Amino acid sequence: MEITLFGASGKTGQILIQQALELGHKVKAYVRRKEAIQTTHNNLKVIEAQLSDKEAIKQAISGSDLCISTLGCGSLRKRNPEVCKGIENIVEAMKSEGVSKIIYMSSLGANESKVYMPQPIRFIVCDLVLRVPLADHNQNETFIRNSGIKYTLVRPGGLTDVPLTGVYKASDEAINIKGKTQISRANVAHFILKEAEENNYENKAVWMFE
Image 1: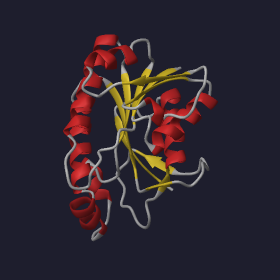
Image 2: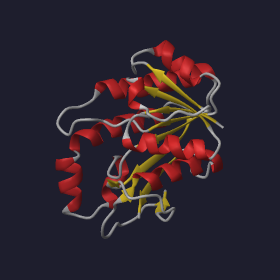
Image 3: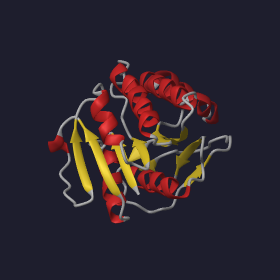
């Protein structure tokens, strides 16, 4: 499988690159700075460009089977219009190039998953601490859902750097969450690549934690 990965220089993105290459996939990593990617591999192509560069995005997507976004929404205080507009540019290019599906890494607490969380955690996390990045994720999720392309929205809980275990909970069903919702970036990457191959959650939003 050939994958175009946006957000490749982030912690989850770099883990995803490693796992994808180990599985034999070809990866086109779209980044702002090439030096952010230290991995070298015959099946890895690093593309240096901005999310505002529509032509570069189109070229990066051309010929791919799938797009994955692990783009972070940045600041806890300030909205990130660059990433939101970037998602729009990615979807536009996907339609142009005939790439039919995107897997978008969002966050637990986005849109309807907010009500899965108990009070007062819901108030503290969604309405206070992560209010701004969740607003970006809400906007991106809504745009993707209404775009007409196929998608899977992946909503992990708090991300950790624990190594891959392959043991985690993931579902698109409504749930009343009790206890901690942490999950390792390695397990999130594992799920994303599994979904890329198996397509179990087409046009669905999936929560994840361990």
